[in-house]
Length: 186
Image 1 (cartoon, one colour):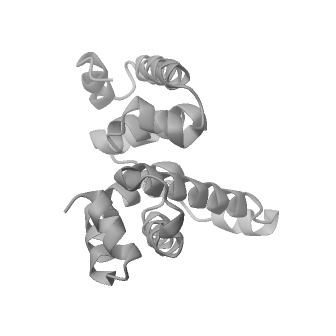
Image 2: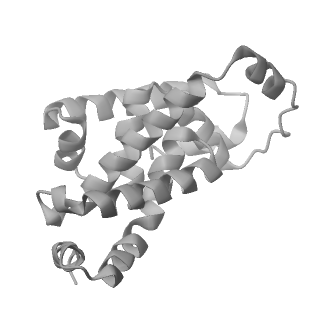
């Protein structure tokens, strides 16, 4: 069944159709949340919250063919809300967390790449995650961000350039990152 057919089935009361949508978009939703909050457990919780909100609001979905982009938008809003709540953590709680020693550094390429992605400004990390991790088209990203396709292209270009600069800044420090940067895959 297509996404649009599944949405219509859910609207007609078929709960099983929503389960199919959840299975279809679960991994993408968790990945999108993780790239915004950088916490696997929180990302999974936020993905679950996304699907609960989507089920409650499914009648508001204007274009059932774009359910993926719609779910991504819900995920983003919930992640930003989560991050705002985290930012309001008191200094005492922050000090307690800072007292916990950090885990030892691992030199796995995906972890290093995620660390560099997290150093990008939100607007850049957001478009890279949507484009390359969520596999969304520029038009879908523009719709989610309520901006123009050209603006999304510019942000994506600038984000890739900034990420490339971060890779180059690590030259001599971490060989695994130089290998990735040298591939031209950014």
